[in-house]
Image (cartoon, rainbow, N blue to C red; front, side, top):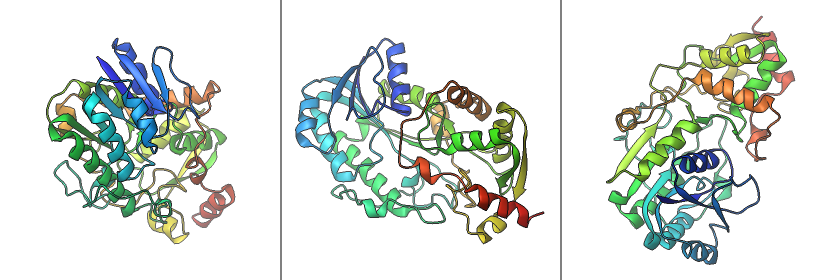
Length: 342
């Protein structure tokens, strides 16, 4: 099997590359070469997905049985369309890592693969001014853009040659966003820890290693494939996640649970100021049964927590990314909120 990985330099990309090499496959990666370290055994092509000449040069290295696209999060539909058109003659199947944000009902409604997706065009360019999320953590423009990129892929390759994988939250060793690492480092500090909302609220985060394995399985699947990638509904909770963080870092922290309305009353930003906290009712009601039926398995979240802490404790440093600084509450603000609930 010969595959191309778009974005093989960090987090999910290396997990896919490592998994493919472990299967004995021939792997080519396409990155800008500015961050991350290429894995030994993979062929690296450097270039920019927004440059037609670079895409043409990449295509000249084909053919491939499949492409796995992990790096379109910062691209507009127009750029994904150009890349898909450049690769279509030399690629058999397109496996696209998308997001549950493509659904109109995210994150306020329960979701399945049959839920309505945002209407979107394939000719839109990326608008950096519309990437930021408000205090609620919800940005419909992001969902529309990602829906447009999905459409760019399916219109070019056709439904029968496309796999659309829609994960919710990805965690695991190498995370560059700063969600789980922030909680782990906060737990390691000990003391009274501001814990958001209801400890029984569901969390459906999945480990990148499980997503990588399933994406590789899709390379060998025929026909249209559309799957949500999330932990089983109700299996994991915010309480379980934070307790696992406290336990693996030494068990000195005390979780103090504060209701959503109190946190919102203090103006806390959902999703980022206390990472992974959302009060929206649909955030943990994502049906992933089609993926499970197709072989997707998500490991217990406590295992992901332990492995991520081990990775950090060994001195590993995530790839620098602008999203890192958006996560985490100021210590003085945390203490102010805690003091208000004594």
